[in-house]
Image 1: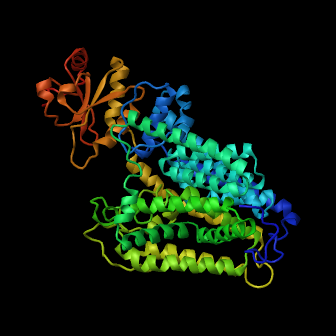
Image 2: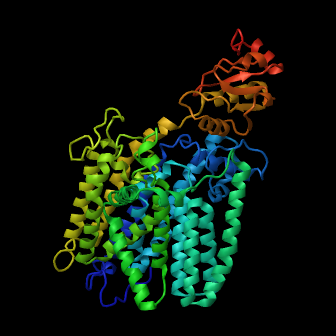
Image 3: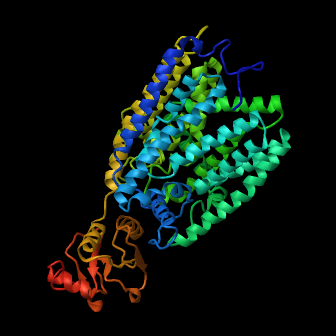
Length: 620
């Protein structure tokens, strides 16, 4: 986004409106900026207090285990089960393993480092929105509001790569702006390195790296030298980092890398109605999660793109943001636009219908543009266009998408954090008791959709009212304060849902605690994990990842053939059929998801039997 102080014949800004002549109100804005940063920090800390143990056995534990691998310079870790992840965040947090060997301490440290990353992101966001003609204090307020909205703050409850990914993307866009303002070869190199780091942060961010490569190629219209240098840095390093990330997953995963598979197949084979439902559902999420500010930002960014193309005959930073959004939007839609995810899966999920996490590291930039434009002062026509776009999303979503959606289905707050302020309205039902085809109203069981939508429409009408008539009816500082308050209320309202998820999905497996107790009493042990054990209703890969993390620094071997057992401690089913023939005896401990600790014949079994720590007679 370029400097916007010299408007062409039509701009989205009100004539002569410079955010209530902010220079005359410098002190109040400075005070509000300080308050906004404190509020942002408090909200992210408040959310993070609910994080006690990992609650994502794949998204979180995989990255935490990769970090341990890097911290010890390679070597052995328990093979990680899952789809695989790109390792930039793991590399960043790996040094924390050098100061602790406790998985609990390491997890807590990563959580609080993540909170710090979230607060730090205010800085590049503020520098970006300064280009809208805001004062430094106003820009800080906008950045703090972005980092306070539920879809961003909720991520502080988890150790996933969303927070550093957004920081790097914000730095990337800032670098693009600086390159556009003064095309030099060093600035092109910095932009390219950030583009490579973005792609290295998450496999789905590869599409953002591709957008950057295309943008650099088109940047030749402005500076062929900067374009050439940028491509010379980004193309080979991007390829090498991609290949390294894929090979790392080959080496450390239990199976093959599966992130992002079948995206093109989904789009090419899905019925148009399936694709349209997902487009509407995810667009509805972004709309209500920001009380419509996202759509205000869309209108503003589109205007800036038009200005770049018309004035400069070249693609500028706004065009890059637009390309990044288009790419990640298509990835997000393709990930869920299939009949299995929406209708046929035994495990019915509401978040599959309104998924938001994949695209939010980019949409948050568009929200920042919308907030900056509101502070600067918008023409009524911009808000009218945004309001009509909101209705075009909300009306068909409520009337056509919502009646078929499993509103009662499973939710993961991190995936749809922006709509978690309304989580208390979700019904308690199942496929058998739910009234299918129920059109949402403000009072019926499907009211989640209606209440969130009406709240958004009312908020947009209030924003529209601030632009009516000559001059601004509401001072910019009052509007910014109200938006900060709305973000805070929404995040606090979202906290119970994410805390509930943490309590339900987290925790330390009892068998992991038992292994630790055995090792503290009898010394380090070799541990085998039985993957042939498949308790009813249990994903044994989930148990594997959690146990592997919590018995750190011990590693365990995963066994698929009974002939391969060679450890003294075996984690297998509570009714392990091979126990008797192998002479294994169950330890006196709790059962975790159908698994228990078994002790093989040998000195350890003899010592534990003498200590009364084994079941007698031997199970099996």
